[in-house]
Length: 475
Image (tube, rainbow, N blue to C red):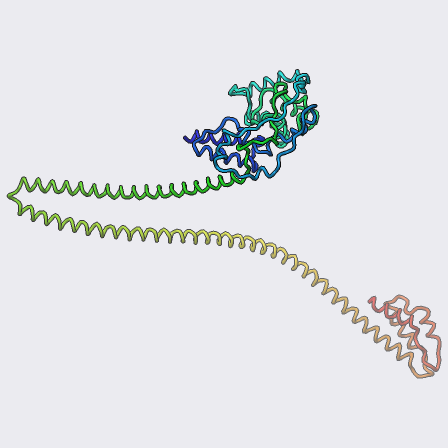
């Protein structure tokens, strides 16, 4: 049953996928839902899609251009969009397969037989061999599923392959004859090898020779009561199918619940029957004992009472054991919960321990680095302290020298500012005091001042004072 349903679904898909692109658009989905609805009504799925079920959008759109390229074949306008919105009754919808048919208006000129076919003769044999290998069921047709792998090997896009399929499937039956397959392979080869795109419509020399001069369906012709009625009616059917499926699901749910209740009641009846059998066996045993030992009736009655008492005791013990078992199960459940909590706490503790160990390692590394840095700082401090001590020693010497210079300056000033009538002999004496350290005393400018006497104080030149100060700073 499941295999049959799967086969029917696959057949419905193949019929509905009119352009063989592996997808269903809105019109193709409407056709699929119609076929499914007909299948649910116990009608067989057709092997070929009737022309009355082909949506107008899937019919040969390029028929007008084909007709215009052939002399004597008038072009027909596309069908009006309003025809897609007509809503016939369910009777007309259900009779699509039987009464709907397209009436051809035009035929191709018989002169087309004299036209040569675009498929080269040298390639036809190769295409025929591929066709024979692909036609597994030997029905003279290949479906889109059978040639899918061959077409996909070309590397062309699905849209391009779908367009080539639509051009080759001149009868729009969802399958290709040998000549149609050769035409499709030729168009694919032209695109792959030469980059020539397939035309929007087949020209006269592209039509398969066996189909020239045969009636061509006119997409604008009237289809009577079997015309494809569009999407609205099929949407209503889809909604009805969905409603039926929901009702079916509800009924199945009720059936399952009823069956479950029946199974439950059956189990109870079986248990009661077992109790009845056990009681019956006991009763038969008692009757046998009564029949066998009528004289010991009283004794047996006493034994019966004793047995009943023992039975009550056993039942009481059974109840106590049941309560104890329930209590133990509760304790086990509680212990399992506690154990799970302890395991979670252990996991968290392990995680905390790992984190603390990681922090400890980081602190130890930081401590080691700090020790190294501290040793470096201590060495730097010692070196800095030594430099400070040296600087202090030099500073002390400089301060001593500065004090001596200050004293010398004061002596010079006191000498220079002496009373009139005095002499410059003291200046020479002071200069001699510095000569021991300066190897030569004062420069000639200062010594020249020593021989000059005046009643007025003689100021010491600025360059002399600077020279004396710099000399003392060197010490």
